[in-house]
Every structure is written in C-alpha cells, then in structure tokens.
Amino acid sequence: MYAPTSHDEATGYAEYVDQQLEALRASAFGLTEEQARATPTRSALSIGGLIKHTNHVIAPPEEKQGMEIRDGGEISPAAYAAFMDGFALRDDETLDGALELFDRRRTALVEWIRGCDPDAEQTVPPAPWYGLMNSSRARMRYSFGHLIEELARHAGHADIIREQIDGATTLELVLADTGRPATPFARPWGTPQSVGS
Image 1 (cartoon, one colour):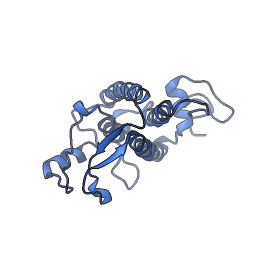
Image 2: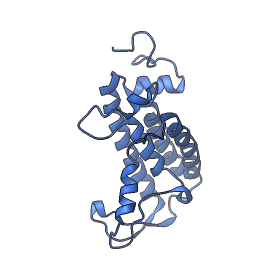
Image 3: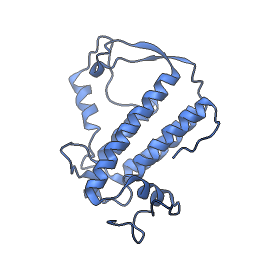
Image 4: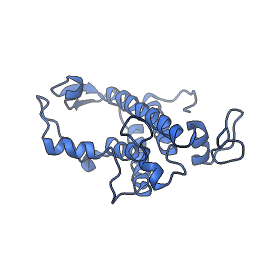
C-alpha cells in the first residue's frame, strides 16, 4: 500500500502506479508456465497475458508496438490483431521473460513519472472503444489518473484469476514477492498457515 504522506503530486502518481504494478507482478509469484497461461474464469484472461498486456501499456513510446489509431477512430485489422495478441503468452514466450521485461519497464516508468510536470500539456490519441474518435489535448495528470485506473482494473483481474488458480490473495503474494514479513492480517504466501487458509 502507498502509505499516507505529503509527497508532491508527481511522486504521488508515481507511487500509486508502482503500487498497482507491485500487485500485478505479485500475482505471478510462484506460478508454473502452465498456471500462468490458465484461464480459470469465463474470461480469456490469464496472469501471463495480463503481465504481457501491461508490458505494452507501460512501454516507452519508442518501444510501443501495436495499435496506432488515427483521428476518426480508424484502426487497421492487422494492428488490431497485433494488439489482441498482447493478451496471451504465445508458445515462444515465457512468464520469466515477460516478468523480466515488466521489471525493467516498471522501474523506468515510475522514475519517468517522478520527473514529470503533471501540469504539462500533451496530445491524447483517440479511444474509439469509448466513443472518443479524435485526439484531444490534456494535462499529464489526466494520463496519470487514467494509467492508475487501467492498472488497478488489471490488478483486480489478476486477483480474481490467481484466487481461482490456488486461493492466493494479493496481500499474501505481495508479502512473499517482496520479501516483507507477516502482518497481523496475512502471512507471506507459501509460509505455514497461509497456503489454503
């Protein structure tokens, strides 16, 4: 949890983003390749697929591959197919590889946000899935809030999927993944009295 403090605005955004990324990463703690690909709910989402998709979301612009959306909401079929491929690990991809990229991009993103001016202006591309067909001007704080929203949604997806796989909960997983000690409310996943309890 991002503890209450009196950080400046950019640091606050960076910490909230990092908190969601910490939960997403912890959702993969201890999983086998098979478990990382499991889709135990009615959704087609898996933990590995969520990690892979997040790698796209947090990629720096120069490394971002996938959907380029032009004003008017036009998306090429090939770009859309490539974007959808980003929600599942392929046979030639591994969870470890996805996590290695995730860790690199997470560190870079959080540091970049810390150094940003939340009041700076930017151009936000169209989002036709929301009916926003053209680019818009917005302050950076808009994008930071939207990023926290998207990461929190995917962290919630990962929570549900992981609980369906083996009953692990986010707090137990975060404690185990980060090497933190037990709290009065949870023990690190895999320690006595946490597995299956």
